[in-house]
Image 1: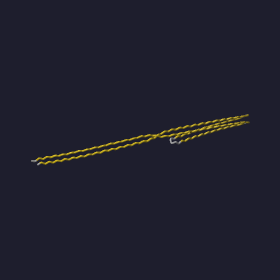
Image 2: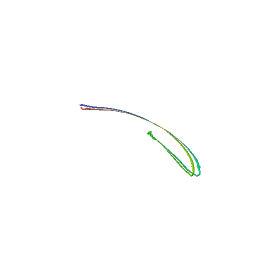
Image 3: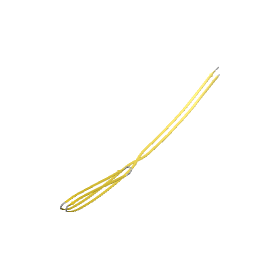
Image 4: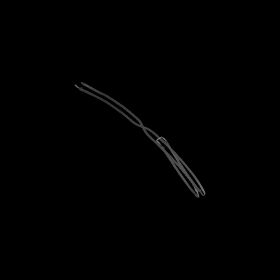
Length: 164
C-alpha cells in the first residue's frame, strides 16, 4: 500500500506602501524703517533801547530813577515719532521804570525813551519716517517613505508510506 500525501502551502503576501509628502512654505515679509528728523530753529532777538535824559536843575534836586527790565524767553519743542509737533514760545517782557523826582525850586526835565524790540522766530521741522523690514522664510520639507514587504512562504510536505 502506497500512501502519498502531498501538502503544499504557498503564501505570497506583497505589501507596497509609498508615502510621498511635500511641504513647501515660503514667507516673505519686507519692512523698511527710515526716520529722518530735521529741526531748524532760528531765534533772532534785537533789542534797541535809547534813553535820553536832559536835566536843567536850579537849586535843590532829588532824582531817583529805577529801571528794571526782565526778559523771559521760553521755547519748548516736543517731537514725537507719531508726528505730533508741539511748539510753545513764551516771551515775557517786564519793563519797570520808576522815576521819582523831587524838586525844590525849578526843575526842567526832558526824558526821551525809545525802545525798539524786534523778535524773529523761525521754526522749520521736517520728519521723514520710512519703515522697511524684509523677512524671507522658506521651509521646504519632502518626506519620501517607501515600504515594500514581500512574504513568500512555501510549505511542502510529502509523505510516502510504503506498506507491503
